[in-house]
Length: 255
Image (tube, rainbow, N blue to C red; front, side, top):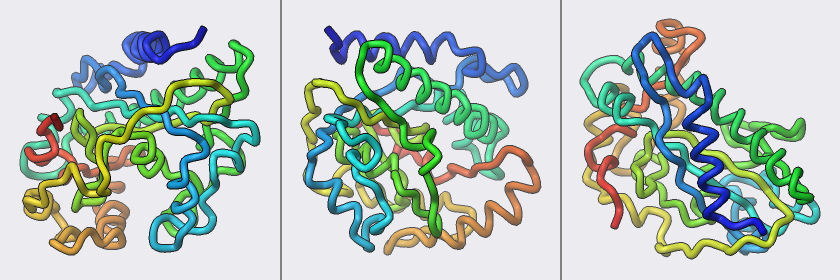
């Protein structure tokens, strides 16, 4: 019988042994540490709230719009290793370790999504990872399946002033999820506020190289402009900044 302990162990083994989780140049012994795992009910009323224009938008699909018989959503966070985080915590341009982890790491994440789909299907359960489906789309920088909002519903953490997502392992890493027709126990959310894990200390404001973050939040257009005009040409095909995600406050583990 499927249980979360075995599922987590199998995911850890997959990540630990995936050949792309190691990058020879620059020297990254491992991109990701062991994943965090949480489960949301496909019937959670918060999924309906994601369709509000002020949250994600009406184009955001519910779990059942991806998988009609879906019962739960398995959400996970892949934390970047200390090698990646510490490199990017230094002043200046994004670290090579970071942009490699962001690019190659997402390929590992895509592989994990596919692995989990097959993992459940081989156990006679319907499963779909929305970002792998042809119906997955992004409209005005908002996807019709938001991994971070799904992670919030599942109980993995909350948002921060920088709009990144803060988990018990920080906020530097990648998210993924799978909608499954499975009877898995639902994770309890240990928070009630979308910013509960953020201290609002303002360190991310100081670390942002573009001034995109203020006490009122983050201007994504400023961030995107910096990424497209300065970062992407420098590191092409790799990209990413993440300076706000490697602030000391976001490294603090939540009790």
